[in-house]
Length: 231
Ligand SMILES: [Zn+2]
Image (cartoon, rainbow, N blue to C red):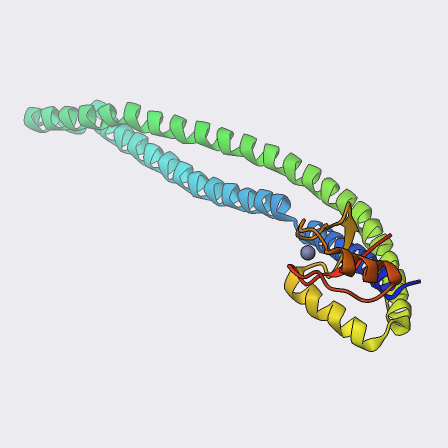
């Protein structure tokens, strides 16, 4: 095999290696990405907090309502027990009880509002628990699928690296240096010559150079410096 042929083959291995490394990165990303599950879990905790908060308000509201009813009962019993004879005091007590009774309806409304909030939050919690369960199953499935893919890629990568080392050992060290140097600046170091043109920059290759390439010499394109290769 000509030197440029060896380098071309080396480049194919390098490209394949790059591709597999990229796949490995993507696979690792998939394996570590559990954002949907984490988001659903934090949603669950925030609903739990809301539930505690509103439940506390509900208890307070119930106590307030009981207090109010107790006060009304006490005044009512004063009014109707006959112990209070003073008409002025009776009028005051009646006024007071009226005022207290007018507070009952708004307090009951508040309590009902809180109870319906609790129902709503409980429904949200139920939905979120179902979501978490589903996301967790998906996550486990994903771990299995991408875990398998990862080990496949790693096996392939190990094989490619071995092949790469073996091939690089056969290549003339100076040519290998040139290859690495161009690869760093151009991405791809070796390019085919087709219909008399360098396929890296699409500039025509002079006949004299083309003949040298054909003879197996290591020739770089005049315009883009890539190593020219003829199949
Ligand atoms: Zn070129």
